[in-house]
Length: 241
Length: 263
Image (tube, rainbow over all chains, first blue to last red; front, side, top):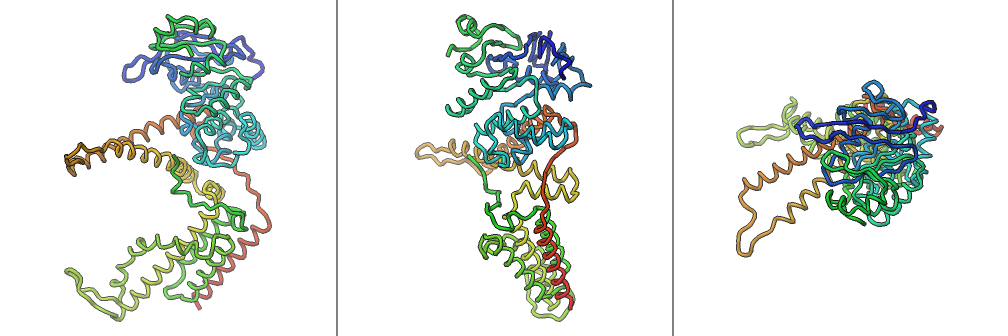
C-alpha cells in the first residue's frame, strides 16, 4: 500500500451515529490523524469513544466520511480497511477467541490471504514486538490479564496495520503490567489512537489528546495544554494526574 | 480466578505425548469402533483390549491405574442399557417383581448387558487417555486434518475457549450472591423456595444475556481481523516414521483383537 502515502492516516469528517434504540452516540465528529501521531481519546463513560472506534474499521456505519490511508471507507473495501486498522477490544477474552496464542495471532494474517510461511513469520515478529515469543504455544485461558492484553495487541500487529486503536488498554492491570504496557506502547513505531481513563498514562505517553463528551469532540489539542485547562477538565469529569 | 476444571491434559514427555495427534485420534476412534464391533461375550478380545489400554497408559507415564481410576464416570451412561437385561429372549436366570412389572432376566440379556458395560468402559478409558496425553487444541487440529467439517471443529474450539470464561463468570455470580446472602440477627433468612428459584432463574437469564452480548463482541473482534465468513487455520504437523509405525502397530493389534473375538 505504498502508493497511498497521504498526509493523514485517518480522516473523519462530520460523523453522526445513533444506536437502533434511538440513543445518539456521535454528533458531528471530525478529526485527522497524521502518520506517527500518538493520540489519547479521553472522556467520561458513554461519551462515544468506543462507538467512534468501532466506526474506524467499519464495524458500525454512521453518517459521514471516513478515510483510512487515503481510501474512503465503503462497504466494498472493508477488508482492505480492516487490514490497515488494528482494533484491540477492551476485554482480551473477547479479542482472544482461539484456543492457542499462535492461532489467535495468525488469525488476522491468515484471513488476509497471506501464504503460510509469511503468516508464521509475522506471528513470530508480532509476538517478538510485545515480548511474548515464549508464549506461542500457550493456551489463551491460562494467561494473566496483562499477558492477554499484550497478546491481544500482537493479534493486530501481525496484520501490519497502519494505525493501532486500543480501547482502554491499561484498565484492570496491576502497576507492573501497566508499566510494561506503557513501555510497549512507547516503543511501537506506529500511529495510535488510544481510548483511556488513565490520565497519568496520557500525560506520559501521548503528545496529543482528544476529549469527547456526549458524542462530541470538545477539545483536540496538545496534551500539555489540555491538562492545564482546569475548567475544561472539570466540565468533562476529568482529573489532572 | 481460573476455572481449569475441564482441562484433562496432563503435561509430560512420554512417547505417547509426542506422538502425532492425528495418529492418536485415529487409533482412539478405531479402538472404540473395534470394541463396538466385537461380538457379545468375546472375553479374550475384551481382555486384549484392556491389556492394550494398560500398555498405552504405561507408556504414557501417567501410572498404570490412571485411566482405570477415571473410568467410572461412564457407568451411569452404561446403565442406559439396562433394559437389554429383560428384553432379549433367552433362558430365564431370575425373576422378580418391581413396582407393577414382573421382570425376568435372561442369560442372553445378561451376556449382552455385561458386554455393553465392558465395551463402554474400555472405550471411555481410551478417550480419557487421548485427552490426557494430547492438548485439546491439537485434538481439534487432528479432527480438521481428518476432514471433519469445519462447522463442527469451529464449534468445538469456541466451546473449549469460552467454557473457561463462562465458568469464571458463573463463579463470580455465585460469589456475588453468596456475599449478599446475609441474615439479620434473629431472623430466618433465605426466603421461600419459589423466591430462591426465581433468583436462580434470573442468574441463568443474566448469564445467557451476558454470553449473547459477548458473542457479539467476539464477532466484532473477528470481523476486525478480516473474518469474512470462512474460518482459516494453520497447523503445521510433521509426520515422523515413528508415528506411522506406532499407528500401524496399533491398528494391527486391533485387527488381532477382532480375530480373537470372532474365533
